Every structure is written in structure tokens, then in C-alpha cells.
Length: 337
Image (cartoon, rainbow, N blue to C red):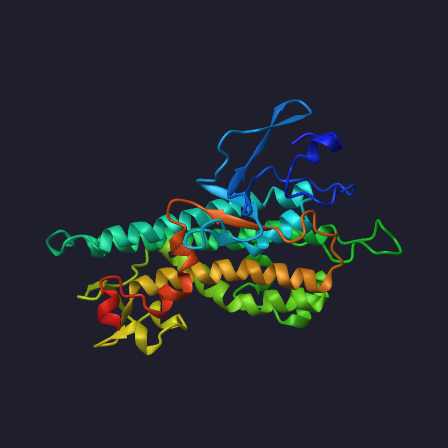
């Protein structure tokens, strides 16, 4: 968006602080709870904002003090953090791709249920369809780490010395998450992260803590994409699709509580999908918290307003934790009780 006059920016209900430090202001829908109203302004002509009729977000993100629909609208803490505090154009440009991938994740979860919940006589090919979706999810999740890393590279480059404004506090980070956390196939220690990139302790600890899960995900993706590795057999149980939890790659996942396993050590395949998405989403939140804990950030543009994700299937993202606790897709609520 080009620079707008202050009187135009004042039309946006989610803007209370008018930044003069180079930050951009997102044009997003806003949900007004008091009046149960959706408000959306777009640039109708150069330098002029006009309110658009309707304005409700269908697929995308919006600002609000709380979700318009708690059952389907997911707060995106990293999005809130960037929109409110770090909406410098280089950083903000990395956010849209992250949002898009999470919308894809919700669609994958819907497709999984469509595959698994078909009538029994039609499920013969489910063991072929579901792994294809899982491979796609692994590839998306792996890309999410690099999208986060591009954002991190740009966000850390903003940090300057208060004594010498041209001096960067941290070394330029690479675009690749792998190049930060791994030295070949070995994980870097916190000391090496701090020494190589001059990362403050909270950011170094963030990378250190994410490295193990990232490496498992990276190895799995490489095996799938470059070596044609099979994910192993998929079992069709009455409760839902399942995998052998004592065999690789499933044995590498630290999720197998008793509620996820049935006889013969078969674990819920849906739990794998949900776990991978939940880890990716929480990883972005952990990054925002780590950055905010060690960097002096500008004031919020709209204090109290959060960024929410919404799409046709975003209810799956809202219920990730509940689904992980009870993942079997063909078990009814009455059977669980």
C-alpha cells in the first residue's frame, strides 16, 4: 500500500498508534464485536480509502479483540506480533506465505477425513490416498521452517546498536533454517549459535529447542522427495487409519500416549497429521515470544487487537489439541464417553 494521508489511516478501526518508523499498516477486515459488524477498507483510488460492502473474511485473516467465531477462527500469535510491532515491509512480506501454508494445512485435515470416513465398501484405496496427503503435509511443514527463517533473517537484521545505529547487533542469518541449526548432519550447540550469529540467548535457545524436531522432519522429507522412501503400511482399523508405532519413521515421533494406540501397537494416523501441524504452528508462536523477550520492539499499532486466521476448514486448526487427545476419526463421542 502506498503512503496514505493520516486522515485516511484514521478510518481504520484497528489503528490507534500511527507509526512513523517505516512500519506498514495491514489492510485487513476488522470484526466489531459491539455492533456485530465486519468492516473492511480498501484503497479505492490513490490516497483514498473506501469501506467495502460486506467485508467478512472467508479465507484469510482479520483483526479483532476476540474471535468472531471461536469454533473456526484461530488466533495466529506470530501474525499478531508482526502486524502490531514489526510490520516493516521486508518482514511483513514473509507473513502472507506462512498464512497460506496454514490454510493448506486445514484443507489437508479435511481431505484426510473425507478419505477415511467414506463408507467401508469405498475405503479400499484409502491406504494409498492418505499417505499421499501426509507426504504433501511433510513438504509443507518443512517449507514452513524456511518461511519462518526468511522472516527471522529480516527481523533480526532490523536490530541495531543504540550507540551506533548503523551497527547490527546480530550477524546476518541465512535463508535456510537448516543452515542455522545444523552443521552438516549435527545440531549446533547454543554456544555455537551464539558465537556464529551473535544471537541473544532467547533466540539461540529457540533454535536449539527446535532443531531436534526440525531434523526429523527434514530427514523424512529428503527421504520422500529424493530417495522414494515408503512411509510403510497403513492399517485400516474400525476406529480409523493407523500405523505401526514401533517402526520408523513413526517410532521417531514422541506422541504415542495410550489414547493414540490400539492393539498390536498401531497408532492413529490422524494423530500424526495433527501433531505435525500443531508443532509447526506452535513453533511460530515460540519464535515470536523469543524475539520479543530479547529485543526492544516498537509499540503496538492497535493494542488489544489480534490477527485471526479463517477459512472453510479452519475449525480443524482450532481443535488441534482436542483432536490429538482423541484422534480416532471413526469413533463417535458416545463411544469415547
